[in-house]
Length: 242
Image (cartoon, rainbow, N blue to C red; front, side, top):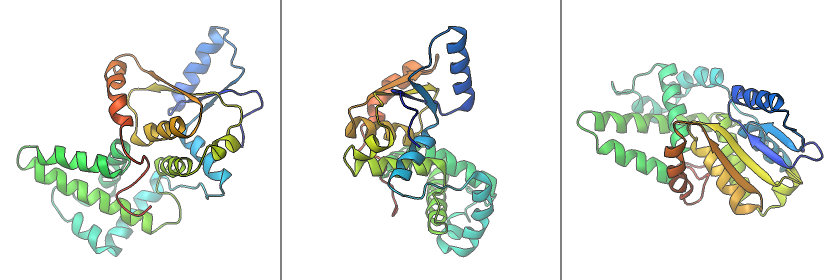
């Protein structure tokens, strides 16, 4: 679905509470909201993928929790990876680790390598435990992708949309979001890798302005990190077949 006619700015607010708070403050300040649409980054992805008929559906957390024991039993690599005492087999703990690694790395090769380098620099036995957990989570993510035609998560939808945008010219963006002049990311105290990669793709493939509004307290740190987060080759690439 295209934005409402007259919309010129997409405000990406990953947390619904932030969207409500921002809209309330605009009402209290009697600031017009004409020309602005508030969306979740995954909604941006769903619209972009829908433009190219790329089935934008994803598993939710309950789906993944029910699938993890099944892929552990069916996939020898997963079974071996989670056999370590440092990893364990509790689906909730494994899903939490999967989500955290997804947010930090997006399963991008460069970021996975950086994570592994950081893990190897820890003191014993934390270094080996961290590397075993990393291997287990990557194995679980790979197995989940192989056992479902859907995206593993909403974050994976954002990654797929990023690749679609980067692999094409700006025609996909223009077809999906005609008239958009600015994209703003707001209310962030941390930035998932997939979200920064989507902004990277928008900057690289469109003429749209991109603004990031940080939260008080963590903003100065994140502002210093933005150039490093953007400095990654082939955003949306993953360590396994996508």
